[in-house]
Figure 1: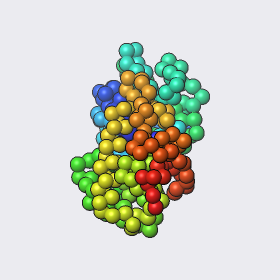
Figure 2: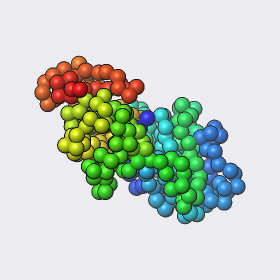
Figure 3: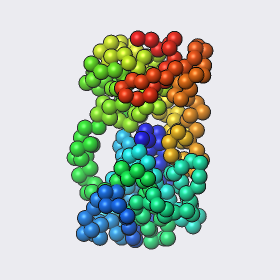
Length: 289
């Protein structure tokens, strides 16, 4: 599943391309991918123009002039691909170009704009969705009421992080980081990378992590996420940046998927184990229980 930097990469690309475009047609091939009432589509989607593209955690919002929004969750394999006569955005498989090859058998939703451009929502596994909802009601969605704070906002201090993590004080620190109700948008890659940065073993119970370590973890997480966004996310995921280039964060990863290689900090061989049900990468010298 994509993490915050990958979804933010998609948002940045679409925010540059979509505002001002007017939706003329919509089609879909899988009801669960587009679970919307036709009357709402006719009234609030068709002929509406895009006003903004936003993100909260791993969810995207395409705001419309009708005061409705398309709420998009990419889930495991969701992709958004924009195509027009002179502008392209390929949020798809980084090892192949989807531009000019769509729709294909993975295309679930097609949005056509009055200027002839098109936005494709592809989803091979069919877990993602595109929902049309009143913009004002979005904060009341169950997920939005429960999701944790955005880790890159200025008000996400180390004290806020400490208090949020204490909600899961009897679980491992990695499990707490992966819990979207604790902190928004963090997944396996950036949990491993930030825990390495703070020299914390992922299986350490939250209640055993000192304030000093929380401060280090806060700084490491913020830095890792900011770097990942700068690098266009990770090519480990099916995303490329707004210019169609592969996300390059994995070139800068310190431990994730580097098992068998040397730790860039101390030279110890990185190992892989399982924590919180996920493959986990650590330096056994720097990250001890």
